[in-house]
Image 1 (cartoon, rainbow, N blue to C red):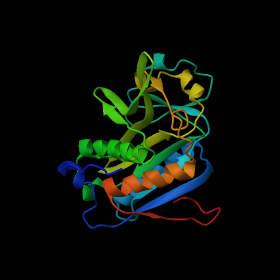
Image 2 (image 1 turned 60 degrees about the horizontal axis):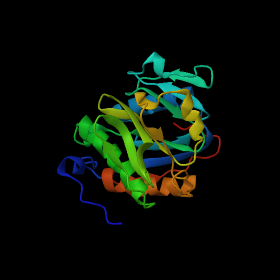
Image 3 (image 1 turned 90 degrees about the vertical axis):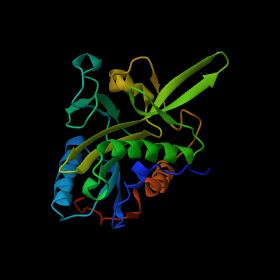
Image 4 (image 1 turned 135 degrees about the horizontal axis):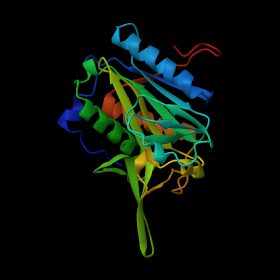
Length: 243
């Protein structure tokens, strides 16, 4: 499938010196507090010119996170999983096994200093990755994230397949996106995802696409390179701290 040309505001998201982003995939399930601490440390090091940009792909154990706009009433089952307050934008979301979380630590000083364009770039990144599987997805006015339209005899609905929640400090981004590959969709039932009650949640496997996590990662990297530029895989020695 041929991708449409990027708009001028998204073309500037490529780093001006062409330096590749570190692309790190961590095995296992990373506790949320450890991930946040790592992201904040890495973002600070990038801002100080002491570290390269990084995209960090992980899975979390089942948990809910509350963004800065989260409404208490949207936490329907507060005792179901751990709940973490977080500084990213957005409302409540779920993370867990079978969902690919990609934390994005990019230096927007080198990528146009345009937060709106950056968020549009994240959207186009996800949309392009889904297109690698033949899944047509898009964004919707007034709704955060990436959506697919589902149809059957006499019915149609729109379901969310990926979430976006970012924070920018000193023009360096952290937090990022989550793509539903094969999570337990029932786990989303403990919250009102992103404050939206009238639509559902889906995944690649739920759509009939038997994608593995490795295949999802490859699709994400292919699309990322188009929107943001080169991403070079980095393998860390076993037991080495992520930093």
